[in-house]
Amino acid sequence: MKRAIITGAGGFIGGALTRHLLDKGVVVYGIDISQKNMQEWLCHENFHPIVASFEEYNTLHEQITDDKIDVFFHFAWQGVFGKAFQNYELQLNNAKYAGLALEEAVKIGAHKFVFAGTM
View: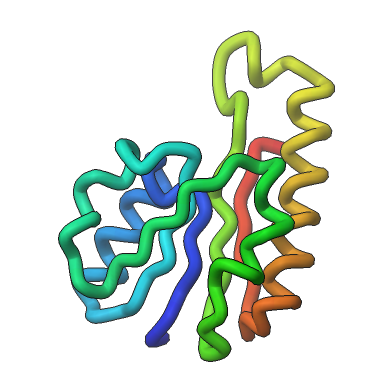
């Protein structure tokens, strides 16, 4: 793997994967709702931050024009614990945005799509 996209790059799973891939020399397009969440990797030459909310995922193919993406990892998810985890509408929205991320992966031309969620 030489190039990857990771949503939730500033989160627990996405952050660990981002760190691992950058250590292996992989170019990472990290997507998160805040640049602050991705602060650890901003100075890394192989890290390309993209700040985007779920509602902005439909523009990812315009922001990532690299046509050699090996894997699109979708780890951004809201409401993973507590009362938010039990919020039915929030969890349905998570599924909806996972589908949108998949559509963007296809438009970008990613060879593989990997995701994890609470459902």
